[in-house]
Length: 213
Ligand code: AP5
Image (cartoon, rainbow, N blue to C red; front, side, top):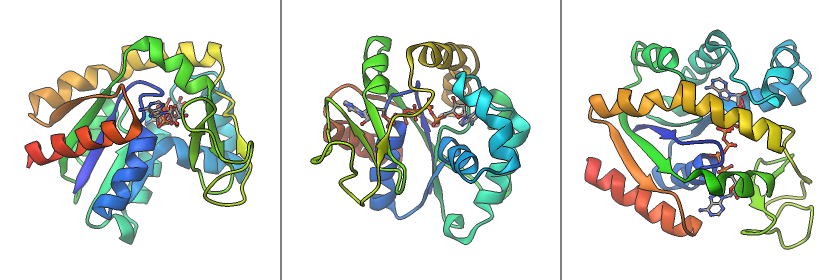
């Protein structure tokens, strides 16, 4: 099963993709995580994307498509994947359509009004080691600053500041939101209310997936 998680920054794509991958047995493929891993490793790619990401702008389609082609060729993605944060432009979506062996079953749009976004993102903390996420207000870790899943340190992403968040929202509106129409026309879009407890949103997503089958 190949799924796409669509939604504004902070809508909960990563949170829900992590839960869904356990349930469906297919890997979460997050282009944001891949780019952050490249940055942490100090690679040439990481250096090239650093400034663009911190400013909240989109990385070039060429770089992203290169990453995706390599990722879907790995054996764990042979039977499916949950794309999180990809595609983000119509050009990326068209390139995904042309990728052999990948047929999208559903596109899950997590709908969250703008007023929730800044609160969600400015309170997010991410584990340096395993990538688990928490929120200082909605899901704090049991020991402050330390991950609940491993001994890793919880940190705040460089792009989770007000200026970058605002830019990311503009990028979303101008370049990613047109995908709602793109996938509605293909009959693949399932819109889910993303406001409420994480478990409630997860139940809505599962229900939407069942309706789609
Ligand atoms: P990326 O990492 O994909 O960031 P994003 O799309 O801005 O999405 P986020 O990860 O910020 O939010 P999310 O929807 O996953 O929410 P989350 O679950 O974390 O991309 C980062 C950058 O990389 C981009 O800006 C760009 O530069 C580049 N990039 C990546 N992919 C690209 C592509 N395809 N093309 C071009 N450039 C690309 O939740 C957020 C917070 O809310 C967390 O703290 C969580 O605990 C909390 N939360 C979640 N659900 C709930 C809930 N129901 N109630 C309360 N709190 C909740």
